Length: 215
Image (cartoon, rainbow, N blue to C red; front, side, top):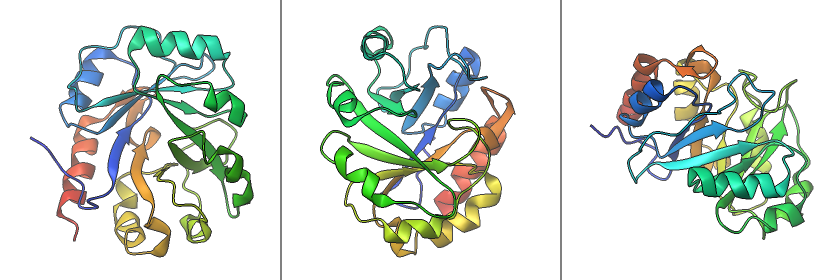
């Protein structure tokens, strides 16, 4: 059964997938994207084979300051449709990835200088805004979404960072705000885990189902 987000223009990405049985179970909920972390310092580091997935689900590889050739090889090996860059990758690096869509990550806490986005406008398909923390993602905390009211671009972005069941009401309010105008997708990860990389299917289904009834 498909559980569509009520935010008609928003998609759902579930990131940090690791175990094949769990990947299949999450895929049965039909998110729009599944994220696989190819960063060996992460507790969610993916180092196995991705099972067969529905064509409607896009596979995203997550990298942190990885060598460009390794990223390109990984795209080909796992048939990735997108890459998510969590490090200090330069615009030239993003432009060189021409076999998959590019999602460039920027971290926010209570304020953000949106000028840093400009050099990436023409070389990325999407931006992703995450919470600034000790780790490059998966910190489990939300940032101040009001900061996005100053978003100067028309490029679609992913909203990430500590989103879980307790954020459903907050998301519902967010969709009514100016800040959500170019929000393309909601990205969830650590708040739906039993352990790093193992997603709680029941809680994910509650999240998706609840949002489908929000009006």
